[in-house]
Length: 177
Length: 273
Ligand code: SF4
Ligand code: SF4
Image (cartoon, rainbow over all chains, first blue to last red; front, side, top):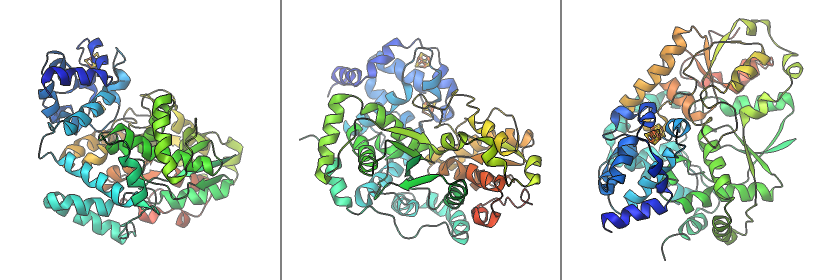
């Protein structure tokens, strides 16, 4: 999809609320992860309006967003900033712009994987899956895991729903036919 | 009143949330029924993948609660609370509701038209003071508690008061007989799941929160979300990070051994007499 069509698609997915943005910077200044973002929300929105949506979609910024809603709560123009970041994440993945090696994306896919296979999420299972790609991050957690084990908090057995494959089928009903 | 209870994936293995929740509701004679065969709500992850999938996950939870005869779901996790409330709002749009309803028919579940989501804290906060003070040990009055709400309770979809300074937890702690430590870090973000892939960045956020709370000389922190509790506690800053239900249990005179304090990483033995 070319840039113009992508921009239109984004606007249709409720992204057009950014057209109200006055570039005041309240969102970026309120964001706890702003230091990690190459272009914090205010800049993302400026990029998109200026026709550089592919740059916004390739950005690592959305993947540092933890959905704390501070930006959205404080935006003077009532722009649903956090929701727009979700839309950017969805579009970035669907259209193939998401940064290839971002660790948050690995963690999220380990999490989604767990839901698809078991219907419920167990931390140890997510970590096992994530650890295949990022063993160092997981090895750093080993001392903590031992402390958890000592306190009988490490769940070794994964939790699951009665029929995870039926749930998976339901989840897939929205996929493009 | 009887509530439908959605524990969420992190409740069972949390540091004594489950134990203290059970002891407290038992003592207060509150009735909660767990949603049968519940699934993960998708938290902040599935919403970043696809709207429909995230609504099927949440819709299934609503439909089972509905089948069990409930119109209100309570949860003790902030991320679940947000995810469920946001979904309930989205599902009030007819065309989306119809699509999700159709998917749920595969499991012969009926999606309700409306459902209400409450945080456990809201339910506790409604309990009259006289019910809470009967067996209160006297040392409770000497403990100063800092409320930590986390960021996901007071977002735009919530119903618990001012977004920056909700006050509901402080009011409840006062009713329990505790002293309240005033501070301004109550709704700052702890970094949530970013603590796995970007731990160093989360450390800064947690230092910001606990730095202020310690400066204000609180004895203990009260939390209401398994992820917040875990992030704050795992940094081990020398101040116990407890659940509101553990503190409630103490104030109700329940034996500390029944409240899961042994599961905390930073010991709370200094505050328990
Ligand atoms: S706070 Fe709102 S108006 Fe201000 S820059 Fe951010 S999105 Fe734009
Ligand atoms: S919701 Fe995301 S972008 Fe907004 S302030 Fe929080 S972390 Fe930053």
